Length: 249
View 1 (cartoon, rainbow, N blue to C red):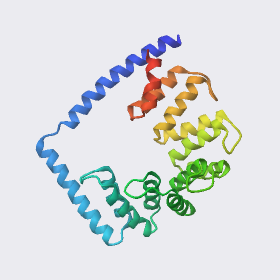
View 2 (view 1 turned 180 degrees about the vertical axis):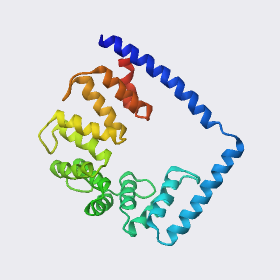
View 3 (view 1 turned 90 degrees about the vertical axis):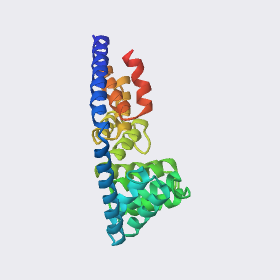
View 4 (view 1 turned 45 degrees about the vertical axis):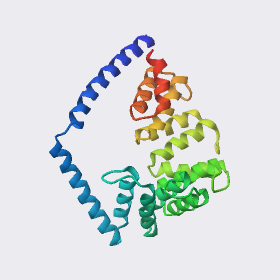
């Protein structure tokens, strides 16, 4: 029965992909005039963000930084992205501080500096910014820029998840699953991964899929596992794609 459900599910997913592709093509083939109009709107927004940022609007600085980071309406430039995140952070914008910390931890637009990254995450977390706490917790888990301490990792990641950060919930699930900084608890790992997945973190979906695939902390259910792998794979999670293929077969 389970194998039959997987076959049916795989068929439905294939049909869904065909439909989604058709819909996507309808939207990504706009007229030249529409494309130009969209570009003009983007340019207007960038000009507006720039003026507001110069006037001290830190959230406008963050939006401008994102545009440079992602190459939206402007040529991608990690260096400019870091500069604008820094301006936002100087103005006590916690999102700016956290994103600048990410850039320091990855060496994008700035020289890699784990200590500086941890300091920025700590600043944001002190002001109760969930993503800052989650990022700081991960630094403690890996021992980058701060002391390696699984208990502190659990505390900070827990703060992030409690504050609504999906990434933090996924990391919390990992700590419960592996027993890092807390007693191993697969059931709580499942609950945390679900929060992460429901909040939009695709790694949370992939990790929850593994729990269903193996029956760890939850009743074994390969159909649910396949659905979660498909969800994560469709959002670009390569590992989930590799796990989905054998289940479809």
